[in-house]
Length: 170
Image 1 (tube, rainbow, N blue to C red):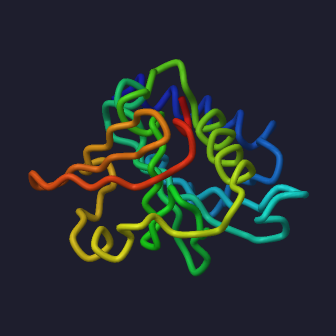
Image 2 (spheres, rainbow, N blue to C red):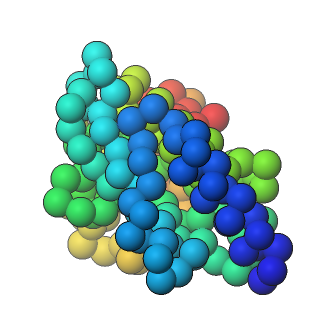
């Protein structure tokens, strides 16, 4: 537990002192607990999301950094994107199977900015309605497979395919 807290303190300072462009730590979110953060985000200039404001929720388990944080969009404005479900769940490989303890909150934020910035068309994943109705509240409970230009999600022995961007986050 002590190593997790030490690592989070270090990352918290890094995010406060040198945040990725368009990102700021919501200071109120860390007043009561270091294991749950809200990061305020603004869409990058020159992208489909320019000027839009979003919030990312980070939740850290006691196994962090060996276990990835739970990361999702929260609040009233969830970006419309092929890899973002309307409940805020984000399909990004570094949040699951491609996680490494060498990654950080800053690198996750940069990956999400990059994912949004490379979007050519605002649209929800094709299975958004079904997924939002049936998914676990924790997006890490969904098994994602990333391959080629398709994104495949498997839950409860059912397999869905959704066309998506090339290996976002890989």
